[in-house]
Length: 171
Image (cartoon, rainbow, N blue to C red):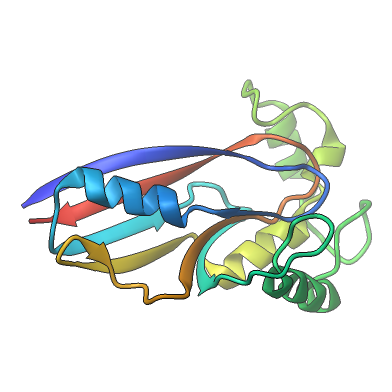
């Protein structure tokens, strides 16, 4: 049994939901791993990010977002509205959690309470989950001809780098 672990760094745009098509990068990691049969796990360590499997759509809007992504955002906006100010639709973050986050010595969490108004991003990411797992057969991902892998950052409050972990395991 062999395993290969890689990490991708992706930048969010900070103004709207960020979709990253990571399919080609994942395929390259699989090819470089030399593993023919096994599994490939793609995981986000961030609680406002998800990994999804979806059809690639050739049509995009003026932001470059694929139409399925635009449709998904439109539906999510209806059921999980943005948290734009405190004391609206969300109880998150709450005073104790805010104190905790403001006290962190971590550049990923600036001492700016406005960047933490992202309860909507946490809920959206919870719906979709943090990972996807794919079967490897004869060195290829079992994703069909139109299946693509996307890393999504649902947090729309600031630009920042996000991490995506890849693990290929098998023989």
